[in-house]
Image (cartoon, rainbow, N blue to C red; front, side, top):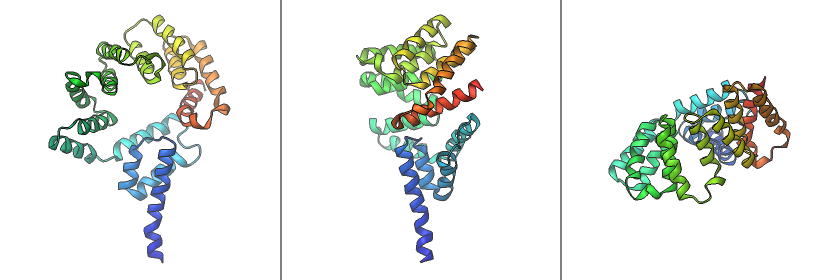
Length: 249
């Protein structure tokens, strides 16, 4: 009886944690950790993601990111590289690109993405977005902006795509005048009023321009929304409210 209990407990914990990850849209890297290092993985996930109030500070969030990056085994990428070498299908290449980006190996991701951009996949919206994102991460801002223009051409509803517009503001912060960036943030925070990440980034940019009063006003308005967050948007926005609380304290 004790033997079966000993065997079943880790499996039950794994199932609970994986359901929580999927339901709350957590980083999927947790699943690899929980499957391949069951007890330790479940313990770390429980402490950082389930226990109330854990992860509210920047330092805890940084710790969480570091644990994920260190514990997720490198064999995942190695296996994907082997799969692609064995069969150079677009499916295998996409999985490899995703893994490189997830592990911040942007140079390798860009190498594959640029190969794709030379051919038929120049019209693949997702790959164009990934190319733009990787170029941004590599601080090749002008090139990133060129691929963002391609996204505009590919998606007639570009102006309503939050991720595209968020990336646009992050790019132009580095290559356009502060007045132009502020004007764009004002337009987008009005258009995407429920996306608190955009408001937080706007406030941070204003602080860099020594406009602290306006920045603190934005942060204060963000914090006021905390009691009214809808359940389906809670996980998307609570991180940015916590950062706002820390920023203004």
